[in-house]
Image (cartoon, rainbow, N blue to C red; front, side, top):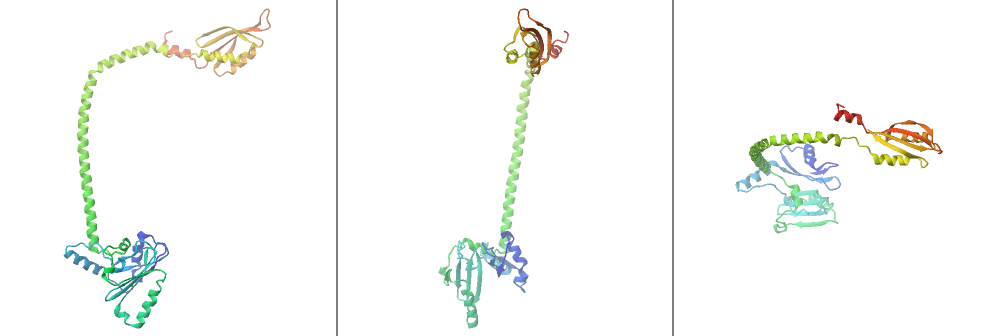
Length: 338
């Protein structure tokens, strides 16, 4: 049957063609097997049909002979080429003539008739006209003797194989049994895994109990050591957590901020409070600069600004706190009774 199949996916091809069966083969009601392939390019292809009854008879005959018939190949498709090059086959025996045109990876034309029909001159003319339309520029092969046929079909031949219902049922049963074997194997492996897991868990529990027993014997020693460590931590805690006063950093900042025409004459630091005395032409400017420094807080004048006898510079006193040095909380934590 010649078909035009625009945009049909390969996996849906047989379903689409089977739905068109009443239109393609009107009047035929017996069940048929279908063999069809989608073309590589274009839309034209040819569907081959075979009665289910005939396929079942052949399968039964082979089965009675102890042979398994997994598929049936029309003789004319055995020598289909393995490539998609155009090809024309003339298959002739004592009683029939079959002409097959192969192109685009599918059978494009299929003509089958008996030699008795060819005795009719008008019919012979029609046959010649149809075969001449296959194309003169493609390869033509004629096979009329049993020795002309290959013993092994080409791979493209199996695209047009008919699978008897009995073979399909047996193959489905074989697949089902294979799945069952896999399932039994997987179940067995799972069971072995569970048993192994239980054994491992019991062995692990035994080892864990033994380990816990050993740990219990060390509990007193560990508790004693922990107590001693706690006492040591309490002893060195006031030292470890004493607020850090970054003196080097502070001196670097002061050196950078105090003008070159000013200098410090006295310096002291206690509990995070820095007190310094000095001489400067403009002490107020120094106070303003220190106030803007992010590392210093609560910057204020600690002494009156007075003239220095015999010098142009003024005496000043400034005090401030180092940011982050919280001595009060430290004392509350470690020396609450003071």
